[in-house]
Image 1: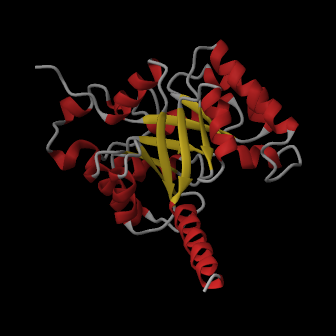
Image 2: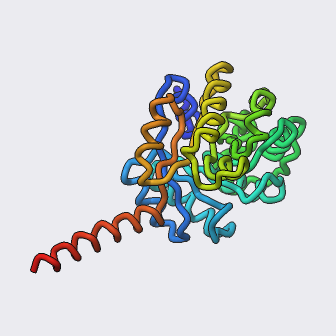
Length: 265
């Protein structure tokens, strides 16, 4: 019998074919939002543990909700710290995003926190990761590193300069551009279209293509120019907006329409 590929492996295979994986971000704590995003067709939901109020319990509920919607759960941890990463890994997400990775040494630290000895320092204590014991230790430990993506965020000018060395670290799946913090690192906070910021993005894209590596980006829901730009560059993994933005956009559009109707009365 052919073994079914897990979501992380399916994403890897899709990116190898040159296709783009499309997802969304969630910041609200209600897990039904993640389930809804998955049911609306997003291939992954970025569960943001860096800029939200998520704790371990709410993170787990979103990972479970993603599975219910048959979409991949990708958790951004608050920082590149094995203590923070370990309990998230035990929840069995389909990917981990490490923010602000600027050097190869930091990339090695990220990988070490994800791998069991002798390849890393991860302690053994899977919970949902081995389906609460329904999967034997022998089966679980055969190739646990294949079950989830390890993604490093490139969001500082130093990371761009060190990108070749970062991507040479074994165990990193791909880099992901964080344009807002990248713009801040060169004095243009929020101006992600500034020529100097775009030049850094072009450098990232060029290095990834030179090394034959996929690359990702995180974008706002209504930034159609940026979405078009990155899709035109062959981006492999793209987060297009978040729950807060989608609600905000819907509210603004509805209120604008209602106000226009009232003016015509």
